[in-house]
Length: 200
Image: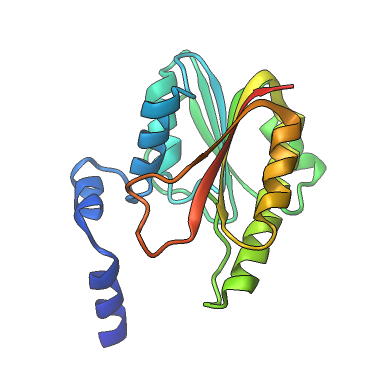
């Protein structure tokens, strides 16, 4: 119990407190908020797919941006328990193994695909980076399938030996390419966001 309490204290900061105050389930919402402020990736009426959406902060923020005229769909292995607006939905599934049922539920025709997915970490940088790369590859495969021409892809990746390989893959599928580290990312984190804009 002492270990758990210590860990909560270690990871709690002003973003955590702000998220609680603003009724978001996790502080990660502010990473997407920063990306939105800088690149204006989500517009009113957009269809947005959020991969690895639990506990729902990005899903909720995207739903607020698209308003009722848009559509936001989330996918995760874990259920999302927060209340969602009518134009948002969540499907339980594994994006590493998308079967026909999940693919049909997700559909196509999206303007934006988001992925804030992270693997279960081992503490070994090379292994964690490789696992992150596998998730990013799966997310990119889905994005290139479901995005409309001109669409946007936002993906978190752990920096490692395969980072450049994945970056090159994104560059080949999108007209514009950006690398962005939000201020709300923890300083010790090796995460960074790759943003592809203008799907070819």
